[in-house]
Every structure is written in C-alpha cells, then in structure tokens.
Length: 102
Length: 303
Image 1 (tube, rainbow over the protein chains, first blue to last red):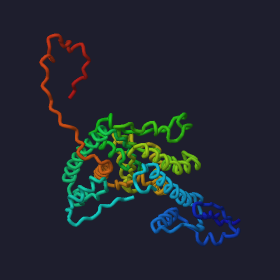
Image 2 (spheres, each protein chain N blue to C red):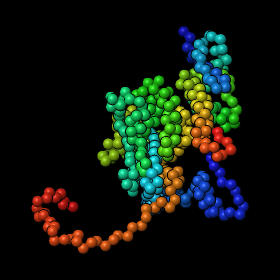
Image 3 (cartoon, rainbow over the protein chains, first blue to last red):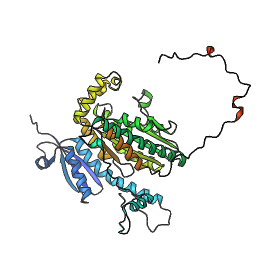
C-alpha cells in the first residue's frame, strides 16, 4: 500500500489561481513533495511577505492539505478583490472635483 | 492606508497632536505609567488605579454616546475571542455608564430551525444599529469561522462561503455609514484554564460554563488555526481586526475601551450642562391625596 500523501498544487498566474490534485507516482509528484508547505502559518507568511515586498506570487506552490491550499489561493484572489473593491469605493465617491479618483 | 502627520519643525508636540486630530489623522497614543503593568505594585494600588482610569474612560464613553446620539452615528463593535477571554467583562464596562437606548448589547444564541434556513447574516443584520445607536456584539457572524468550524456545526462549503462573503458584507455596512470595529481577545492557554477553574468553583460564575466550552477546551490548536485563518482573511482596510491581550482582565478592559474611544472621534461632545429649574408651586396642589400605603404591595424590607 502506498501511504504517501496526495499533494495539492496551487498555480498562480496573474489574476487566477488553479488547484490541482497530484497523486503519488504521478508526474510532478516528487517535485511537489520536495517544495511542499506543511503548515498553514507558513502559507500565510509567504502570502504576507509577497504583499509586503510587492513581489507577485506567480508560480506553483504545493500543499499537503486542501484547506491550506484553499487558504493560500483564497488569500491571493481576495487580495485582488480587495484592491478592486477599494478602487470601486474611490470611483463611487468621486464627485468630479479632484484631479483623479482610484 | 495609514495616514501620517507631516513634520513641522516649528510645531510643538502638543500642537502637532492637536492639528493631526483636527485633520482626522491617526495619532499614536502615549503609554500611561500604569501600576497594572508593574509587577511590584500591590493589589490595592492596582485596583485604585484601575477604578480611577475606568472612571475617566466612562466619562469619555458618555461623550462618545452624546456624539453618536447627536450626530446620528451608527457604530458596531464586535467582540470575539475564546471562552473566558474577557469579552463579557469589557462589554459590561462599556455599557454600564451608557443609556441602553443608545448602546445595546447583542448576544445571539443558537439559531432556530427557521433561522438555519435563512441567509447566514440575516439574524445579525436584524440587530444592526439605526442612526444614533451603538451595538456591541458579544460574539458575532464570526461564529462561523470559529466555533462552528471547529466543532463541525457548519459544512465545509458553508465555511468557505462565509470567508468569501464576509468582507463584502462588512464593506457594505461601512459604505452604509456604519463604523465597524472588531476586537479579538487573546488569552493564553494557562490563563484560560485558570479562569475555567474559577468558574467551576464559583457558583455565581458557573452559568458561564457550558458543556460546549468544556468540549472546546480540548480543541485549542484547532481554534488557534481557525483564528489565524479568520484574522488573515477578514482584516480589511474598512474594518480592521484589533487584538487585545487579555491575560490581565483589567488591563485588557482599559486598553480596549481607550482604543475604542480613539476610533470614533467625539471631541467636545459632552452633554450640555442643565440647570435644574425651580418646581412650580402647584406640584403639591390640594387635588391630589396619596392613597393609604396599606393598599399597595410593598417588597418586605429585610435589610
């Protein structure tokens, strides 16, 4: 019996995030296993660092748990949503008097 | 976005602060020399200081209340944290000097079967403030990201849907003119255990302990993870999370109230002085004769 855990890869490309299950023995499994992020704390820290340093997250990240993978993908997508929502607030509040809005 | 005060060499510290406050900018608060933070301070000294500070903060809370009432502001304050973290204590200290018509405490119980079929935020939305009101939520819609998740009371899909929707829900509240403040009361494992023991031993506090609290004690780590995820997902510019270190209850109360007061500017909003006018002479006119006391049911005076 193969007791190696299934990996969940998160691929971030610009505005999108894709989740993909990688079973043991399948292509890309060993690579995913090598770079796996085990703890949610580390996934959150990685996301926060990319925000602080303004470095795009684009790339493939591997996780052992669906929850952690979803958290990571969610954080990325929600941060885009927050930027859009904040931009919308500025546009909505614009009364034409300032030079720019948003 | 944090606003900063533009430095001006010619300005003194006081005028800098005043100008910043007038411009609605964030002013870093100075630390108060506090016996509560001094391990050498005696219990009496600590209590005296606490009572004095709390009294001062109560006066400020009344000013805040006046500002909310007069200007028709709408304020929502959310208190979240583990069991025995001290949420109830701070809510009590905030609401005690205030008019219950202005400041209302909302602590919703388990949803009914009907409510379970409604939109998740519906029963909370019904409690939101009208103009001139402040609502203190003793636990809130964040139940879904905490206790419900950890204890398995909601499905995985419900949980992720909550994380997806909550920021938009809160943004809508803020856009509608509500000031939304969110406090997380952080208590250590040891202190929580101590407080649980205290609740078990003290018959007046025993009601605070539910079987659910006892069960959740065993899920410390799961709660920690749920909390971390919740804070990182839902800390938005429009409604920030503020963490209150609540291992020391009294310090936590003072720190939280002091912070709350800085979040809603209310300078000069004290209720206007009233001169009690002389009573008109006819208030004791001959037409009224008090009925005999024997016809009324008095409470026995046993003290």
